Length: 127
Image (cartoon, rainbow, N blue to C red; front, side, top):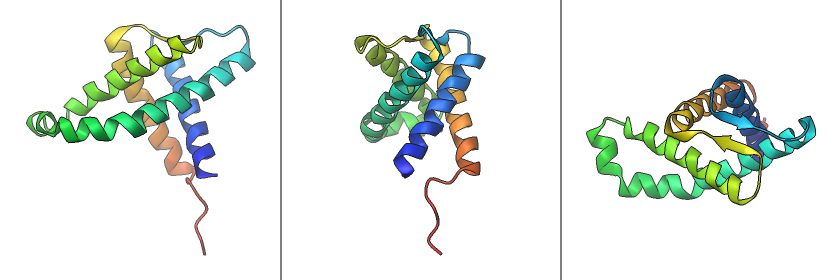
């Protein structure tokens, strides 16, 4: 259940990023197509982050230390661009126009996901 909640949160965050950030767009034929696209892109984004981000943190820890963590913003933008590339390979109507759109899109997705996660718990507490 927690996985589905996280997937929905990420899909909503991606949708908000498409509304706020110029250059991040979903161009499906209809609303249903766009919703399905956002869910699949959220799944891809989650897999990319789950697999690559820990590896990048281990191998790039020097850059994280030297930049006091600011390198994480660049890594998030690059992972967002990778998600765009994978979406293109999968023929999904999701597109990111370059590094800066990915940079701001990744920030919006992270902040919105965090805000929604504060309100909606990942799992029910055992009491």
